[in-house]
Length: 305
Image 1 (cartoon, helix red, strand yellow):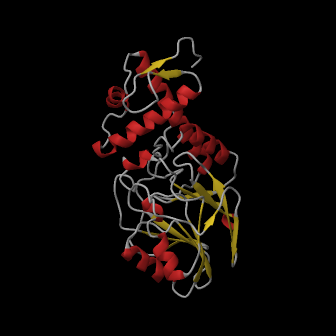
Image 2: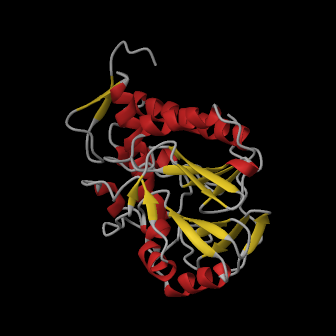
Image 3: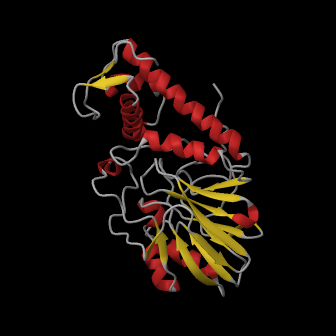
């Protein structure tokens, strides 16, 4: 199996506007953790002193908002773009909008009925309300830059990436991360949608990815192929566990995630559930009830897996 070429060691300093390219600067919030790695990276698009777009304002943290305002300096924020509605990405969005006067753009508010977010430490921002709803292909322009939205459901149904045309850069939120795989948390998170979104990225020619958490990804297409291979490997592991008579997710986890940080066990269980739901959708697996972490699962006899 192809190993995912994670980059887990990269230079950063909290609260500083680090220049990453002629049009991109990043400010990392001091909210490290098992789901955020070193913290949430907020990206400023545009040249210092000019019109700027901000991608993922980060957590509800006054010190981070102050760091962003210092980085903005004499510039003017024209757009605040949000990849999705987890608090570590958009908790500070309204505070930044009030300080800058810039409108918020996102796919929508947090999906109703998303129970999976309760397991994830950073959780849902159910108070977030964008000023403008956007979907796939929305275009935003500033002084020397053009950004467009790319719908990538999976991690959440409202997840977007953002493409910076001038640099061939894609801001991937939590869809692709440089340090770890993405949590897919049913019922709103969908493994089927996630895999389709991976295929969508493989049809693109982006030169670099900028995740909200972790280092930039310098070779995007091999990275995405490795993530896809990892997901297929997990499917195979689950089918093997079912063949061995382990019918509950709790029985599978110790054999599939050996050495995993215990703080991530809830997320791992949700990932396995997401895989199982997709395997049910394609007719390879069935459950004794509506699929949940407590369900009994079994292989479908005669299924071509």
